[in-house]
Length: 237
Image 1 (cartoon, rainbow, N blue to C red):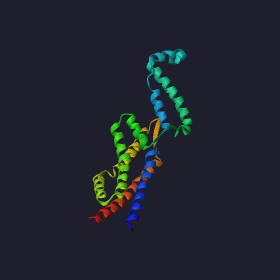
Image 2 (tube, rainbow, N blue to C red; image 1 turned 90 degrees about the horizontal axis):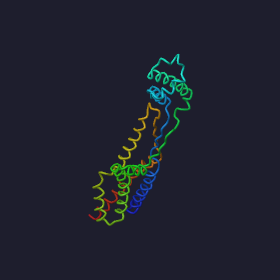
Image 3 (cartoon, rainbow, N blue to C red; image 1 turned 30 degrees about the horizontal axis):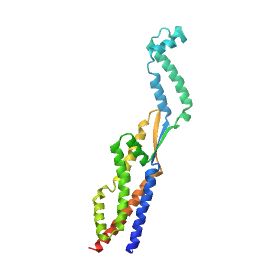
Image 4 (cartoon, rainbow, N blue to C red; image 1 turned 90 degrees about the vertical axis):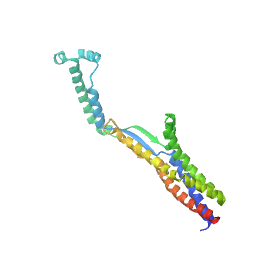
């Protein structure tokens, strides 16, 4: 295979890498959805109805109650009795509407890498925002542009640029690991609502798969470009 053909293949791979990176950064990577859990709602209701009513509210309720049955109860006993009655009524309604309540979406948020970066900076999480911006935007684009430049330079500067790329090679997979940790963190957060009134669910979006495709093509493009540049430099050695 001629040098020109190999050069064209490397350029095409790098361009495809950049084309895949853009939707990977801008499209939805993870959807976080909050759904109602009938059991969690019932548990929340039980805790709420078991709470002590303020004394002024108990005093407002007393005139409307049967004095023979409730007149001898103190505030704590009356509050507990009212809570049990209201809880039983509400639990019956929840049990009847369980199919309607369960898995009803009450919250939904779509996460993209660029939106996450902006959110972190807006909330003054500068370190996390900078790391994600650096390893998921700057380094991937920078590596691709450096390889493109090196492919069209003469052997000597191309060799120097290749040495520089190799020097930062330890960071070549940082973007992949960063997004993997980020998505794992968000997925773990989805389990925090289990047993509560709202249960969180996560679902990968197209942005996640675009970024995964970028990672694969990025490795292929780097290997092809590196082999070509080494051959180019070796010819003049």
